[in-house]
Image (cartoon, rainbow, N blue to C red; front, side, top):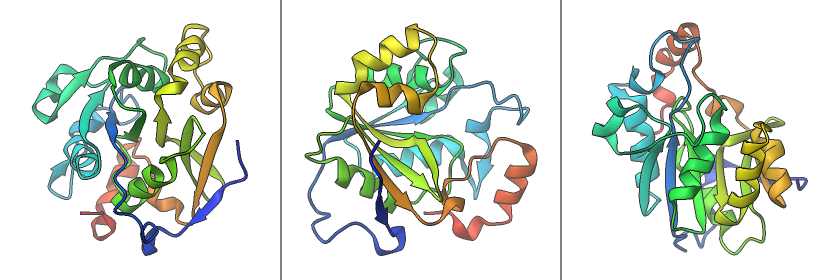
Length: 212
């Protein structure tokens, strides 16, 4: 994994942002939502279900968008791709998405990360264009964000092997697949995951920070 490239999401992507990077987008919506006590994907924040918000963001910059690991009750929001293996964490959703993709680059976003700006997603895709890396991953305040990252289809074979071997930690699995490009962002709050009722209640107090 490289040492990282700094990026200020408030300034947007570089001047040649008009360069289009063909990519598929996947909302990672698997998991049991056990700590939340109900399906996180359907929680409404700012008048919009989390899954709908994530699909809408990805649709702004991706040629195709699907929901990886989502339950059948999410079909109203997009195409559902079942997890590659149940109970193996988000790596199963990433592998399942890549299995269904016809694009070299594939942008993944966790359904429970509603504060990630579209500008961040654009920056990740921009950095992926022409890159020799198998993944371009966000990092915020030193914390890697493997569920806000662009994965190359070239990583699929190794990720599938890691999944089958029970090595489910996403960062280690992708590092085994090849070089990873890290993009540093300065605002860790933008990558906050909503895992508990308390975290969701806190998010409701900061609706002004949602990227519309």
